[in-house]
Image: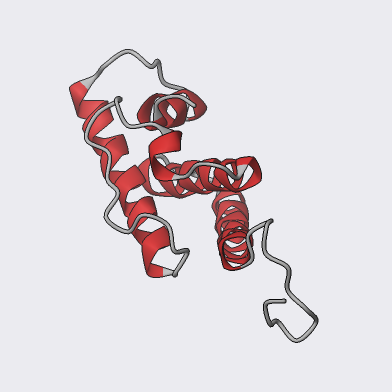
Length: 125
């Protein structure tokens, strides 16, 4: 599915060409976002970190395309807010709300995967 670092760099408006200073700063923010996903109990790889542009989205999460897209958006928003926050507080507030929504959706997607049927009481059937 492609490099996590390069995907985030491009979304942030940077070239995917290697730049050790920028890459290191962005990787720190990306790794923080992955740690938060682990801490909020998504059940995904808790010890996952990126150290270069070699790590891919498939290495973190496979199978559920919708979940991968949620995670990509989440990692981008968290990285944007930490690495390159806007001078406009309204934009930062919007990103913060989006992050909270994505956390909730990612939790739901990992708690109840597509192949699992859950009844109204929240019990597996």
